[in-house]
Amino acid sequence: MERKVIYFEKPGKDNTEACLQIAKNAIRDSNYKHIVIASTEGDTGLLFSEALKNFDINIVVVTHSAGFKAANTHEMPLEIRKKIEATGAKVYTGTMITHNIETAFASKFSGLYPTLIVSQSLRRYGEGPKVCCEIAMMAADAGLIPEGEEILAVAGTAKGADSVLVIRSATSKRFLELRVLEILAKPR
Image (cartoon, rainbow, N blue to C red; front, side):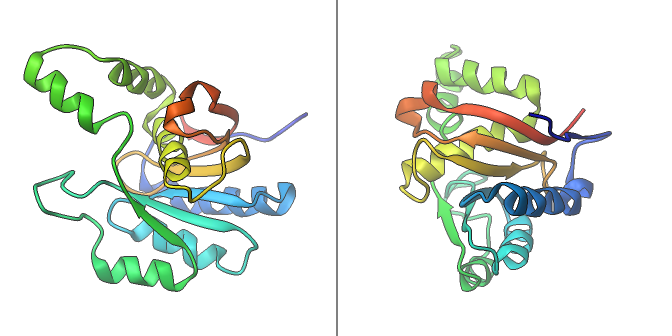
């Protein structure tokens, strides 16, 4: 098998439009049925959900958990969430698998814990690829995508999108069954 891989010179939101085109091409060429998109404040989720609404694909936008930035807050405004859902996409807000619980323990007890090791290991490929793996598990944990299927995952570094991966999905309980099958785009 031969595939084209796009490597961006720099991470960040300037690569979002290119990632959208890469995702569209992958859906057309390989007939993926599920796409999971990371979107903190909703801009990337809205862009992708509007652009893909006429495709025959299950669109899941994954946000930060409630209280991620500050207690009793949601980073994605309700009006943006409603716009995304109006396109037929689903929005999932839940616990970030490799971050929340162990970060609390690590900061309190100055230890290093397995999911933080996994998180740091995945970051060797970049923040976007790490988040792609994480949101695939989050969406599977929520029952919004099936386990064991090839899906597209889109994420980025800070804002926007800069990574597109093909992943065989798994829930967090079966993390060791999750497979990154292809990297379609990522920053160098």
